Length: 110
Image (cartoon, rainbow, N blue to C red; front, side, top):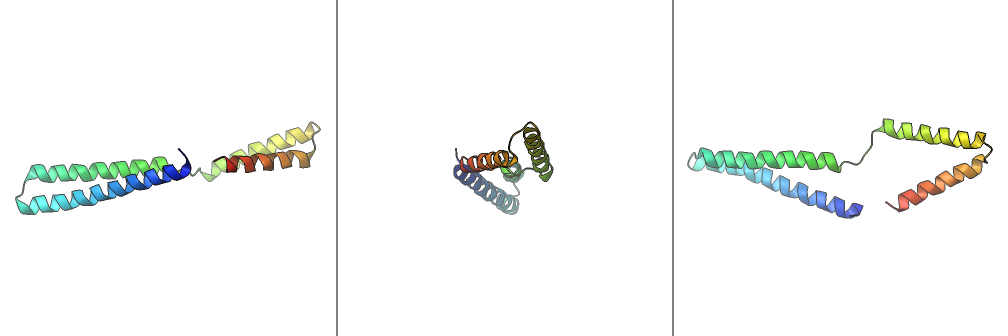
């Protein structure tokens, strides 16, 4: 699955959860006003609660941003590797050019 398919699936799941959540709240209100049926009220409440939990879980899992600390740590590891290659006799400009090309390739393949 590519990124646009994942984004679309997450958007659909979020929309369904919102509809279930709002419908569950409306169901609780209608069931409690109509005939004070505790079973119907509880059912609508459980539907709302499950929709809220699923919405939270999907939002958490779908988030693909990394903490800035990890990005800085990866950058430091990369810079250390470049320094080691240069210290071993490689051309710094050639190594940095190779790293730039690898980054561009990685961005294109996502």
